[in-house]
Image (cartoon, rainbow, N blue to C red; front, top):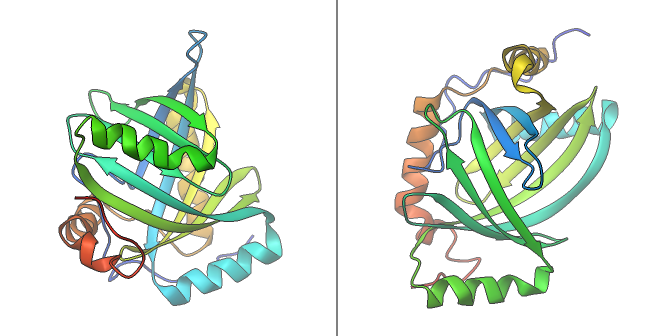
Length: 220
């Protein structure tokens, strides 16, 4: 397949959080809590502008399998761990991502409940006096493209992102990440460098209350 001239992300600003690092490419370890088997989830992401987002959406609608779309509200908490609660159209969840030594492999603990229980999760963590770091409001389109899971995201106040993800085992992590970068290259894109992601998220973290003020009331 030839290159799809979506464009360069060279001049596109990007965002990132302190401990909720939005890595340009990373491998995440999911631990099955009932076994010792580890699966690696590798992903790459690039920040795009609205024109690139619309072009990508048209491209994937034509050549990929549309999996679905939905809205997500995610609340990140202050603290030493990456602790979050989220609700989407299908369920609510609380989950903890533990960063390992180099931040590339992450143990994930996740508990899902019915979406209407999200307010219960909010009350629980408020009662425990957890402080909100940021709230994230995202609309996501999901596709399957030649075995790769693709997400096109629009996060209010943050911007537009394309993310590609593949599951595998630890032994083939480098090979899997190379494959994802090659798929992104077919779109004329490269994973956004981490310093740019840090800059973007730093801005969002400082201004998120103003950026989403018209969408919701934020907790104290």
